[in-house]
Amino acid sequence: MSNKPSNHYTSRLLAKVFDIKIAEIASYYLLDFFLINVDRIVEVQILSHIVTVLVFIVYDSSFQFFADGSLGKKIFNIHLISKEEENHKIPFQKILYRSVYVCCFGLGLLLPKISILFALFTFYYLYRNGTTHWDKILKLRPVYKPISYGRMVWIAVCFLFLLSSYFQILRNYF
Image: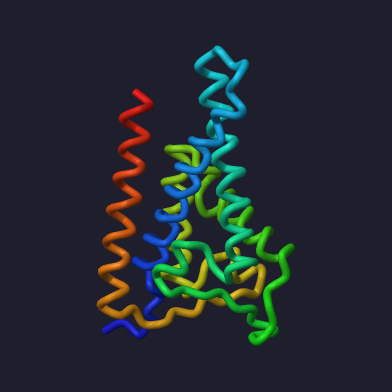
């Protein structure tokens, strides 16, 4: 038997996947404003990737600050608290740093093959140390509250809605 604490790998992974897909869907609609004069395919791909990364950072940090958690964290009942001051609100600057750390070091700037390597390293680090390296650096601690059966149904409905929206965008894209 392992003495390692439960780090809720699955809920952290699925919450982050949920947040990434929300950022991708939001950036898809924002691209219509930015792609007015861009005709080349390479420029469109680079610009769409940059917009997605920026939307993810703004989405993750603003929801964490104003709503005490991104939608993915809210659905999976995960909350961030500061290790230093547990009862105080985390400053926006620290939350913004965390979002940038997550995007750069946890997701490899969402670059397809690089992000897989970074995600594997992150989950290995989480398994070995019980926390991610950005939470350790910024002195933050995720708190996991139990998930009820009703919330599990809500998670399934949200993922189905998110996937259907995502596939609708992909179908219109090609």
